[in-house]
Image (cartoon, rainbow over all chains, first blue to last red; front, side, top):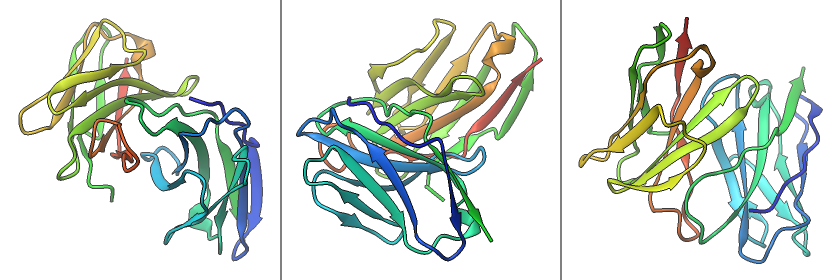
Length: 111
Length: 116
């Protein structure tokens, strides 16, 4: 599975959009981009995933660049409860087995 | 609430002992995954079962074993425990074996193991 690069930390003001970047320059054509987050020591929470088109659900939007070498997770109106570590993971759609978690981005939402 | 349940929430035991962690997947999910999260290692994949059979293996120690039962719940057995085994243990489940687009893993709340 391709490697991802994320900034170690980011701040965001409450009520503003949080834009979390992820670089995955070695991604191949059949690899999906997944986003999870982990709040304190809770179990990782699935947020969204996509292949090449932009995706939106009730939690967030995922914007994938045309060359698929990077993506951005957007939380449209961040709240204090969105403070968490966010993980960007790329994974082959036909693969079996595990997710490989890196260090992620620690997002701090401030009042 | 992801629908994945894990018991117990907390476990405190001594070195050399053996413990069993239990996981019930979401209704309809056939795959169960086990992960370990320690302070210095981050989230590490241990093992996956699909419909009762071992499907993939990660960095699981020989002292650790797992199984998935006909009702699809899974147990992770940790034996000859060492101080370094203290960690959070998460179980995740997904519908399929990992093949295909719709395979999303949903995580349980975890079991915190403390070895004294």
